[in-house]
Image (tube, rainbow, N blue to C red; front, side, top):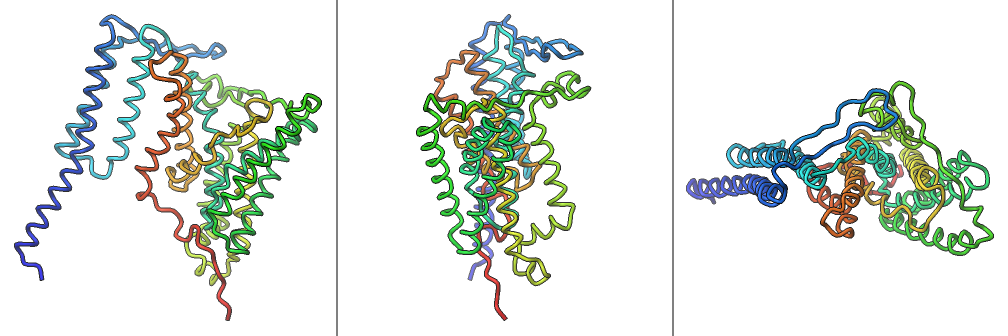
Length: 428
């Protein structure tokens, strides 16, 4: 039995450990500030200027570019990081530490952009427009994951569904046109979603294994068909679908800065906005959404109240596949106008990270997709600025961010309670 003296010692130790954990982020923030001050700032001439261009040529209303002294901007960023670090050590941000870490990350990225663009100009608006474009497959893939996992079915087959959608979209789009290509991508995604549903629900195959099988099958089959048929010079016409051209939304696209970033894109970007809004309303504002989520949280209780658990999960998997297939069509019909081997490049797996980071919420998935899209846009911009970092390291940036996000979020986010658990209906 513990004595009062022992309890007091335990409290002192726990309090010390708590303070120690609080100090670690603060020290890290200060080290970041020192790096910016002693490494980045010192390498810049005192009179050097950085220009952030905020205009794109066709914007009706032009606003002045942001021109500022590079060293002053870096000193300001370093000061903010140091101030946040000192506050964390002295008082602590308590529950808001995740947001502060995100803010520090944003300041570091801004610091590198300011430093890398010293003495030249960088199109900040253009970089953010690219961010939106690059976020499309990740956000749509995350929405596909939300649809299935909110009903209790783990779907790591998003990558396979997307590559299959990209292939079907390119081939059918080349034969019958772009809209037929989109329909084909959606249908092939639905078919793979149905396969995943049958294996997971009817035969109770481990859902991770089922998803992995679909990924391997889709990647292997599309690679084989591409090498066997599409690379043949006589069949080139089967892989020349073209892609949807950008369409500037009247009035909205003319808004300075915001217009070119969000409202001057092709079909897939606007479809992403629509799907996020539609799923946010459907999942959280309708009876269908309540039944859908109840199956993922407590299927037995949902079954007791008359919800058909199996039918709901089947539908969730098929809808998930349809959305993933549509997201895959972006690569061939919304980007390059043809199919290439493994052109999804792991975006389906990054989409799963975005889903977790977004806490299984469509709006959260959009925010996470924008984060990963910004990482890809930043990689492209830094390489154009001839940043003194190897190109291979820059290409790793989106995946590094994925690992950092998962390390910081997993354990804090709570997914559906019955996610990945097969349901067995009790017989009377």
